[in-house]
Length: 497
Image (cartoon, rainbow, N blue to C red):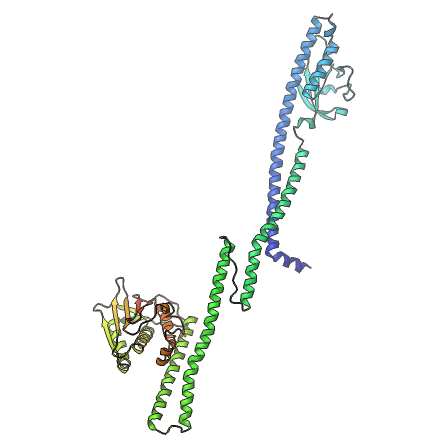
């Protein structure tokens, strides 16, 4: 059960909901604490203002009482101005105006007004609450009135019975809005906010997780062989970007899978074809089917050519495998380009003469000495010259030239005036097993691996290769090499042979 709970929490939806609710609750708690603090401070301030206002109101009432008592003393025969009645009227009237309870007491705390005394008012006030010369305020429990804020103001009257005006107001009535009511509202608002947070978290989790689920399902389908599986890209957010990357990855995987299938098919074909020829002609010789010496010599020549072709294919496959694995180690050394061009060209002169093609070597006078791998570069140049000679018609011309680059390094070019390469095939010319004209390549023994090997080797040497071609005009392969090869890690014990 515990494992099931942990597994549920590992899901993105549950974690998203948990963290969202955690942040929401934390935010509500922080807001509540801050709000409670400001509410407490505001309530205290309002209560202090209410107390000060009650003191001021009590002093105003005391002055009114003093004035009424003085008028009653000056006009004793006027029934309207009788002290007892006048004081009672003033206390009741102004008490309603300030929403407070007010009484007049003597020096012992006995209530002398109003008369009759209301039931909720004590008949006697604690003398400790009374004031002598200055107004006095304090908190006290006044029986039925409860905990109250009491203000005692001394009265300056001719009648000693009227000693203090006592004004009392319940403590809870000093607050404009009771804090308990406000806290209840806060709790209700927090509950509503938390409910909305849960709903919003669920909606957001569905919004985020729905495309992720589609991506997960698409990844599952792709992993189980559905190479055409893609996801719909909607919007410009991070998930849409992830969807675009997934589609790009799917295309690369599909292409890689197709290349792998083509690779196996092409390798099988390239190996099976010469083996079939070798087996067939060898068997014919062993069975003494061939009687003429000329036919025997032709059969042996075919076997020899097919053996070299098979060896060349296997050598190129091995080179590509080592290049892909990073096991090809270069051995840079100073290389005079002028001498190197002449040596390489002379090695290919017999092949050019065999195909009745003129091989021209052009070397600039000020060619530098560069630091590169001689054998690796020779494999590249020999492959380019071999292709150019084989695919150039008789009486044609192949040129190998070398020129210095302005910022160091050299530029090598292999030019021919053969049939050229169609424009739609140029972008695939360096792909493995790609051949412009399959029938012509088979006739000349091409496997479609040579140019791929050339490009990979030049990448190791820090160089670049490009091609220009126009049907009917010829083809130009251009190689640029830096003054020295880039620093590459060497693997101990790795052989480049």
